[in-house]
Length: 443
Image (cartoon, rainbow, N blue to C red; front, side, top):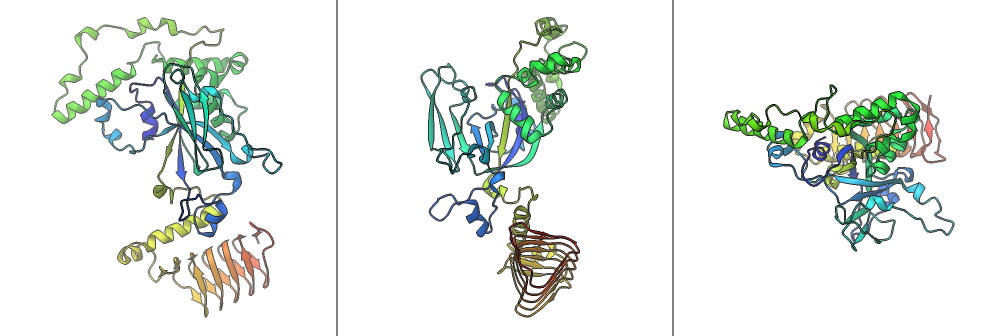
């Protein structure tokens, strides 16, 4: 939220405001020699791995939000902002989509529209640097503009979108104006990324403007708000004036008085709306104004990313449980025991937690597991990276790996289940073996 506010803080150096700010996590990992690991290798090592359909090419511009003015920087909320600034997102495409021709001899191509490289100094080169592998280390493109706002774009495949977004109010008006778009991920967000340099007007588009009167009023309202015109036609205080007033207010609070909060005498009686007649829109023609905006991303550090994830798939849920268990066991024993129920068994060596009232047979092995209450484990049962809910019964000589077992399920003897889900109350006959990855057993 604070990163989103930074783009809208009206500092010097940019005329664009934020439309959407997304949260990205760093899920990359390297081996001892610093070579990036594949997803399959990360899964074997118990790290956060992704399915191929969840991987994306993400292009981040080096453009960052402008520095806060001294007045806004003095406010308490700005001091809580992350030290790492958010970045403009100029590209977001599925890895499968980019590499759909892979395997037939064609080299995958990733095209970046020239306008997304923004304006650069005359004769300079725009550099696209690779991050996370998958593409060439550097591509070059010349630019002929006069101001260099965005000299580089870094391409990443090691960043993950956790589907957490902060949206500006006008984006909701855009969604109402385009009812045919059903998916924010697959339709609204790509539209915002592609139209951010062309402006809010281009995001709404002339087609919707012509067809529906309600859409014309929506865009008129959005443009008025962006121009600082209130509903009654009066101009609101410009953004830099608000910044100054807030700074005065903060200074007044610290000094014990608010005398300097009053406007200058020269400003009294002036109606700013007198100078805004030119911004009025012709009711019959699509507006020719242009209000650029930004789609930005706040990227968490690798350490902060370890427990920031969407546990919506089996691998991510298992990884999240394993990471919570690992971090709990790393705490001081007086602290870790206070976080689990009385009678729970903690195994730092095998990174496992076994809750009370469990019955364990002989030579049972549990590694990177979370075992619920009142679970029965038969002799020589082997569990690796498994989450077992309460009241489960697992027979002797059964092997479970990378799996989730629901409440009250019963698994027979001599079973071999890998990468599967056993539903609540399900009964798995003795001797059952999984045939394919992701297999599910239900009642």
